Length: 161
Length: 288
Image 1 (cartoon, rainbow over the protein chains, first blue to last red):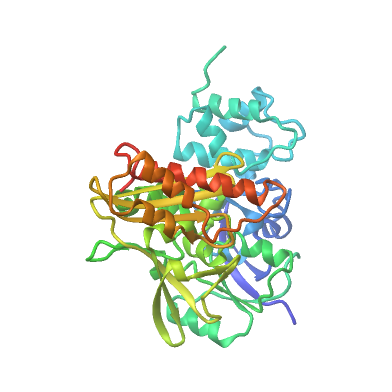
Image 2: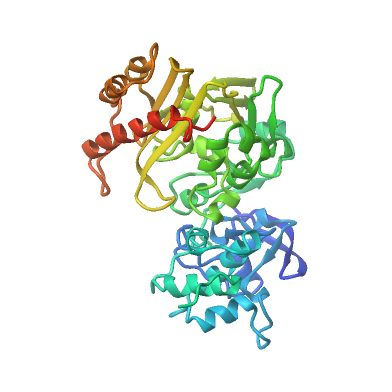
């Protein structure tokens, strides 16, 4: 059976584009392979780790748990949308760097996108709110303390000391 | 490419969706996809056609009927249910429980209808819906029908829904002034899966006139009728509470797995049931 294909129109990081995609293509593969945006990582490929998190119409979602066709007419933001490649980092990215909130860095794109969605919804989260807000993202280097600090510092809720 | 080949349809109406389901063997409903896509990746499910119902407006709505019943569209996401002003006002416990499901990514996509139709034994919704006396509104080629949540779940991952039937809505009957609802889970971690759950809806004005006590994490949500009877007809006292808790465990056969033995789960189900009964009958903790 030949692949069933459909045209979809998506806005990715502000750029609206139409592509014909196989209906069985996952959103994460559309972003990485079709659009070449490889900042979005594939970790577990089973919806557990959150490395593939992107923001879709304002909400963090796991792009390995969506079909590309489901993103038709949606607005997607990937980690590439946070700042220009060689430009200044966004506040959140700078805070991750300052607090050493990454070791191997594999989970970082997902952590950043979930954090961005969290802060958009809850601009001043306390530590518990950050931990709960990032529950869908796993860091196998287990660097959670620094990640939570980075998000809190970006939000201005980090207690010094 | 990780998924086996299939065709994809995105109908605009419930009628078109039912027609698509009826017209293709091995057609599957795609809602949030938070379980279905994994099942497809693992080849646990065969789908020749995916019928994406997430763009059907009628399935996304949350409304209130003249008798006060809340109608949760089956494709309403967890986020939409948790933030709905109607759910927050009339079924605050359901809103609170939903706001803590899994994680933010899953809450953005997962749907109440998908949860119910999956009938995962460890899921949050099924035991709560049975306690609330919820009804499930289905539509198939022969028209609509409505069945109580009690009769919907038949085995793990198995419900009475027909092949070409679509769950349209979950209907939550209005709570009475004297109703208290509570929900207790023993979880492996925060907002994580559970070893034992119990929910209770208790109607009391000093005298308990009705009770629905339901255990989760067995093969299906199961009413605890002997425990309910131990409470009905008098005030809640330490003695009636003890009698009710002693009766908990009826028709309950949770599995033994890496997390806990069946005996441990049963013991914890009694603890959760006790907490749920107390919470549902305590002014400060009951929802309703």
